Length: 495
Image 1 (spheres, rainbow, N blue to C red):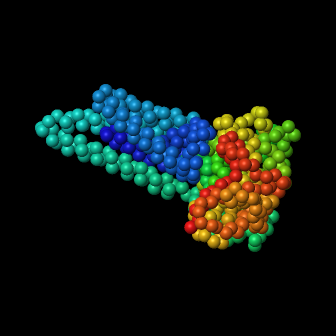
Image 2 (image 1 turned 90 degrees about the vertical axis):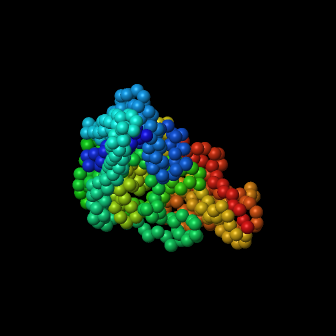
Image 3 (image 1 turned 120 degrees about the vertical axis):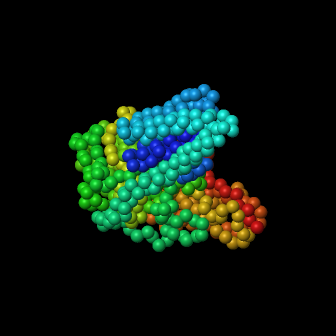
């Protein structure tokens, strides 16, 4: 157990150093980020399927469990074959340091927290195991046993206190939230029309047509959410352009901004899943900043880069045509929440987020698909990622009373629109549902259909028809490599 105590103290002090020095260099965050980067698509899909937006917390718990097992082994090794247990713990620190430095957002100083963890852990296990050996030498060693127990308790308490203080210090150091709260968004030069009165069906259990910020899904690779000061933020546009352009925060907010209602969806969303949300965004059309740079006629892609090194490959036509692709600074009437990309992110209708919705964006490189690859493209995902026509059933859920009730849900195909939804029960005839008023072709739409429920178990399916006449396919496909397909089907017990 002394190995666990030693690593606890080392990890706690490493986290404490990171909190004050460089939060993103946290040993846990460095190792976790490397695991996310190295994860194959199937592992990512499994994590999201099991844990949803809690995938990062689950990863950290998993790292902690593995670390406990390794620490236990290191303690046993130090007792039987000293100093090899201490060497193992020191190597953990070195590995964490290397990972922290070589990451896309790494720097030499990022090695310090992990090195502190390794050195402190190694020294502690050497000292405690030595005290433990002395304390086990018979009844005359009672004072040594007390000393051993005291120092073990001190090491354990110090590790726990260091972790707690690091969390408090990290929170206190994050003044970016105060800056965000103080920002007053400018009035849009082009305001979005009010949400149509008939867009919200107000059916209990049906997802709202506009997703509150607090409920908006979050899927990204950042274990430590980047804290970006708007005063120091800038966007660099370069690559296959006539002239390089650098846009500052002050220049961005002084530009004629536009509002747009856009639904975003994650490519990892399973059929019927909830990794999707709709918001009213405020920002500068990307085509305007690209026009300032002068895009080369041979370019076909823009590689966007986040401050933490994440990249996305977006077809250039999606950023230069008439769709509302934005450098967004506002979400549902307030500055972007930090976890959703504050101060600036990309919002592009019609594409899955992994090729378009870069948060904390700092670079746009105009290039070609045959010259550059993005974060998820190198991991086997499709390079373009157009949104697929989808629909889902929100109500009823699991059970329903017999009699007259309603079946309702959502349907979407951003930048194309939805013309209709059909529903069938127990494999019977397809019946058309009633669509709510759509906000735009770039947003999802609610639908409903009356149902007289009879006692027993019933299977309900739905399928959407796109505005272009395309019907939602029944071919079942997983999220990888370019989005899930199939009809959403639920089983309802009626009593």
